[in-house]
Structure formats: structure tokens, C-alpha cells
Length: 97
Length: 351
Image (cartoon, rainbow over all chains, first blue to last red; front, side, top):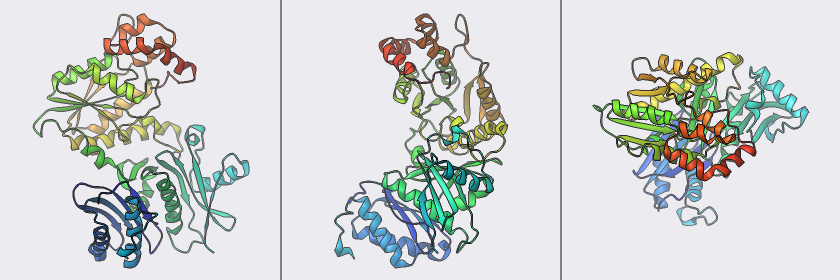
């Protein structure tokens, strides 16, 4: 699936994460800002990449501002962002949960 | 107690006074009309009845961001809450790219929430966040030549394209392998952005080593850089021109191996003369600045402003002397529409 429009989910508040998805042409590319990037950079990217894969998204530009979100929060925000980006916000794909 | 976000309405004198007092305490006290015009939304973060944070949106620009951390649960929490409010508000409008102009000491706070610095000086900084960003802009610029080519750039508003612009670009084309002509994209001039871009393209169509591109969000009129956080009016122009020069020198030019820039000399406008001086100072050894003496027509220095005045007064002879045939044809065909725009209040004495 291709990203239809740029979309965002999440906040900049503590323990949350803000994820923005945009059309890409070169696989999944990340721009990630996080205080815990040193320890969790790979884990955050893996969680988001896995969610994108569930929706069949192979190309996307992903901007992430992490404020120490737990894995399930990252997953939830990523799902919301991708459903918005694919214009599926009104018809969530329950199976991926 | 959790802080609450509410809109602030500047038309309400009490709210306005309260808002200005709050920002003044944070050392932001420039509330002149030029800065306030264009603001579409102001939000306030309230701890009970006490204002503890604020910010404003004007198009793609966030300004008047101020936060007081006194009594907050953690440092930075209020700032993050205000910025989240804006970004989510803009996302609902389909806007995912914005700029912040701020004091250098706040750069770190904005970087922390995903902003990147486009240019900075001791007076101020421009940052951006979101997509499409400056990297997207650079990616869509055509690529000409390689590292060994001599590549020059010219930035024009061309409102409208005159023989003076032609002369400047032609000189650059003769002296270099390739020339990028960046047309300022802000749509605030007598001639629309599409018209200006079209007239430039037609006016240089015969110059095969010249490519005409939009300046996008990155070669805008530096005069529109917000200066709400600068106290001293006389330093505003220095702050604006320095950031413009550094953005070009550090980000745009290296991306396309541009090592030379051509500008017209400026006998008429003090602001533009100042701009040329700043470019010379900032470019230093990395970009060679060529200031080309302005072209004269029979009576006076060729200037787009004189052309606009001639359109307003229906003085065909003056504009015919100053513009190439492509522009003259366009003016003749659209003279009524252009004069109507002026009558409806379009300013012609700016850029």
C-alpha cells in the first residue's frame, strides 16, 4: 500500500510519541528525535516498521519525536498515523491488532 | 491541577492586555501591526486563571511562543503542551510543515521536539519541522553539471521581469557553465507567482544553460522574517538579511555546487543595498558575489517598481523601454486586469 497523504498522531508530552508519516520512495526511512535514542533507537524503529508492515506499507518517510513512550504507546500511535495516512481512519483494520 | 488550553482573542482588550503583559515578562515586547497581522490563531495555556504559556500561528509560521515554568509539574511540559496543540491543530487542516523564528537560546528546546535549524546568527534563528522540508525542496531541484562546473545563482522576485533582470541573468550565463534562477514564491506581488515565474522563463528561454526554478519556502522575501522578539528596530534588517544569506550559503548553494551569486547594484533602495552588503560579508570566500551595475534605460535606472508605476499611470512608453518583448506583450494583453488589481489595493511600491 502507498501512503495517500501525510498524517500525524500522538503528542509531544511526556511518555508519549509523535509520529508523522509521509510518502516515500526509498523503503521506510526514519528521522528520529528521542532522549533515549541511544538505548532504544532500534527498538522504536522496529515497532513502527512492524506496524507499517501489517498494513502493507513498504515506502514511507517517518518522522518521530519520542518522549519516552512505552512500546504499546508507540504501536498505538503508529497505527493511528498509518490509518490516517491510508485514509482508513473511519474503518480501522481490527485484524492487525 | 492540569493546565487547560484556551483560545486568546486579541480583539478583546482585556485578553490582549493580559497576553502582552505575559509575553513582556518573558522579554517579548514587539507587538506592532506588521507582526500581528496574519495571525490566525492564538492559544493560551492556563493554570486555573493564570496564563502560563502561549503561542500564535500565522500561515506556516509559529510565533510569540512563550512559556512560564513556575509551578509546572516538570520543566518543558508546558512548552510541549503548547506545541502539541499547534501541531495537532495544523494537522487537522492538512498542514504538516511549519517554521519558527526565535532567539538563539531557544534553539535547543525546539530541536528537542523535532525542529531542525535552517540558519542562525547571534540575533535569531529559523527552524523548521515537518514535511515537505528543505531536503524535499533540494531533491526536486534539477541537477546541472558537476563539482567541476562553474555554477551561479540569481534570486529574483521579477515583479515583473525587466530588461534589468535579463541583463543580470545573461551576464551570469555568459560567465558560468550553468545558472539557477530562483523566483521568489510568495504570492504578495502585483504579478502573481505563476505570472512572474512564467515571464522569467519566457524571458530567458533562449539561454540554454539557465534553469528557472521556484524559490519555494527557502528563498522568500527576507523582509517577511518575523522579528517580534527583537527589541531594537535598527537591528531587524541585519537579523533578516544575515539569516537569508546563511541559509543560502550553508544549505542551498552546497546542495547544487553553486559557488557564485549575481545581484544587481542598488542605487534606489537602502534596504536592498544593505542586503547586498550582508551577502558580501557572509559569503566570504565560499561564494563569490558579483554585484552588477544596474542597467539604465533612456531616462532612468531600469526597475520593476518603475514598471509597476508606469502600469498604474498607463504610461506605455516607460514600461516598453524597461521590459523585454515577452513581458511587454503580457502587460498589453492584461493591462486592464493589472490596473484593476492596483485599484483594488494591491501595493506597488514594495518589492
